[in-house]
Length: 169
Image (cartoon, rainbow, N blue to C red; front, side):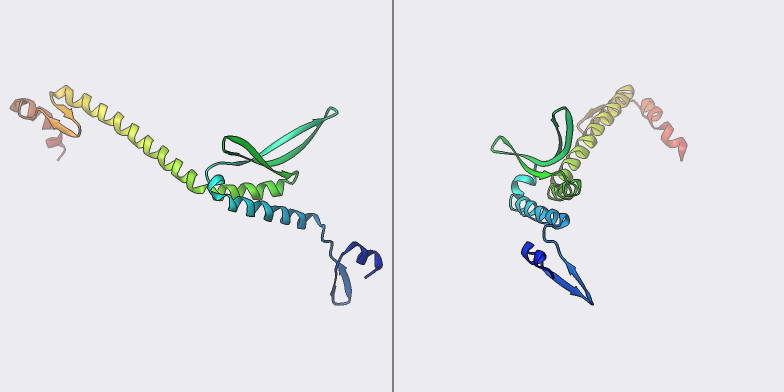
């Protein structure tokens, strides 16, 4: 290990006969450090970011040149918009986005169930309206889920109503 390496603070590791220098300021190590700090912050503010927040991509213009993309985590706290700057790394942004999606999974699941419930409810209303129209044609009424008016029907109209059912057997 040379003086320049020791002066730069780079530790040396020996693998067999080769001496390999490890650069502590490596880009991957910086990304891991940045991700760990953002991850700790997000997990520490889980109640806030469990419901909202997303990774946003932005571009800047400098002397007519378009620069970017620059990534940040945007969220609201006490009615004010806040953000955590992530930098230019798309890899870091993807990792943080996956972490946010994991934190917000229960909210997305709850929203999907609510939409499914509303869809089923609207289909039920539509089907009950169709059923009500069919019952009105034969002289019956629908009250909630109960069919009324059976006693008022004559024997001939009951037979006419049940004829398709009896002939299919």
